[in-house]
Amino acid sequence: MKITQFYWLAGAGLAILTTLLFFAGKQEVAPPSRRNAVPPNIIFIFSDDHTNQAISAYGSKLTKTPNIDRIANEGAILHTNIVTNSICGPSRATLLTGKYSHLNGYKLNEKVFNVNQPVFTENLQKNGYQTAWIGKMHLGTLPNGFDYLNVLPGQGHYYNPDFINSKNEKVQYPGYVTNIITKLSMDWLAKRDESKPFFLVVGHKATHREWLPDLPDLGAYDNRTFPIPPTFYDNYEGRLAAQDQDMTIDKTMRLKEDLKVHVDYEKAGSYSRFTPEQKKAFYNYYENKVSKEFDAKKLTGKALVEWKYQRYMKDYLSVANSMDRNIGALLDYLDKSGLAKNTVVIYASDQGFYLGEHGWFDKRWIYEESLKTLFVIRYPGVIKPRTHINQIVSNIDWAPTLLNLTGTPIPSYIQGESFLPLLKGEKTNWRKQAYYHYYEFPQPHHVYPHFGIRTEQYTLARFYGPKDFWELYDIKKDPHNMHNLYGQKGYEALTADLKIKLKQEIEQYKDDEALEIMASK
Image 1 (cartoon, rainbow, N blue to C red):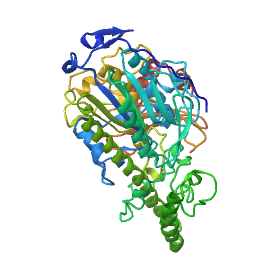
Image 2 (image 1 turned 90 degrees about the vertical axis):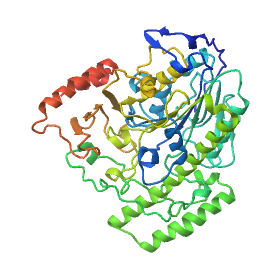
Image 3 (image 1 turned 135 degrees about the horizontal axis):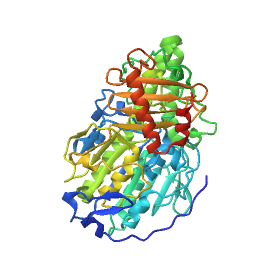
Image 4 (image 1 turned 45 degrees about the vertical axis):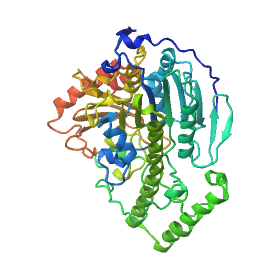
């Protein structure tokens, strides 16, 4: 892993909080109720592959997430927060740059983020903010703009993980990764420079594959049988890319590596990092209970795939349990330390995720379950409790909103817009649509590259690569993207209008590759 040297940057003055600023053509206004107050701190809790369907604040009946719900209930919840490229590393690159993947250069996972480009945290530093990222970053290198870094190399490990710190040192910490990240975050908060406001990213590995729960959460859902999603046995009729993917629970999900059936606890890998006590607990649960149950049932066909689904859900939600618990611990710390009153707290994920819809796990698609991601935000005195935002917000909007919240000028390179007016309940001429472009093909999961537009009612997508074709969905009538309307009689005028809007989005965001594909047959 390439490591970039970090330097502390001197903070600039805080006078901008009391005036209207214009910077590179973007207007910057501090929140009215805070113009003469101390600038707010921000904690951005950023998880991996957590999804709306597993959050009770979003209406999930699968589990309870009381601490995530607390942020939503004490602030705002975004119901149509979508990503520009539904995959992990690129989503983090978009957070840092406020730009689409084709401009920030990070289109695919497991690449190296270009650290020579500007990131919004550098602007926070110039405005006097102390900045830190702790936990998962997954960008192949360490970007500028942070006074303190202590991050997982690559995907990181669930148990006894290594971290890379600002001194380029690799240090292994004993324990479970979610607990460690929370402890490291609270330690940094306790030791920070209290004369400065701060911006902290708490980057969780959870709930990423291969879903290793914390020891107290083993078997947490063993008494639950989860309902099979209505689209679980989707036959993908009329959707060529969906017919040709490799991300089904049936065929792609692995019994040993993903579901821990007869795991080899001695070979290298995640389990080689376990202490004897950790290994014993996993062996007792997964070998003596789960694997024995699997052997005894002798499952085949639908019974096997549905058993795999149940095991997947139990592990995924057990991993999420620890994260919600740790979010609660961090919120309690803010209360006890007195920081809660002037600290913006955000919980978001890098994209959505499939929990059996279409028979899938993973993400990648412009389809609703992976396109939309959770976003809840609390800011006492500025955002009214139980605020619901239904407008389309994109993750290119995250960076400018964070800058706006802190009264920091928004640089011209940022492609998004601040949605702070929406959070404050102000009337604003907000966007009616958003642009999307996914690239990673053929591995992993063999999802065709595609770009498209998501409006308040429709999704239009152009798939390209092995085959070139279009898909159109009425997401109000068909929220699971089951019925491709492209080319059907009666949709000609709508399709033509959406293609015009799509081209306008492509031109606005300077996606030359997509523009060339649009011009081809």
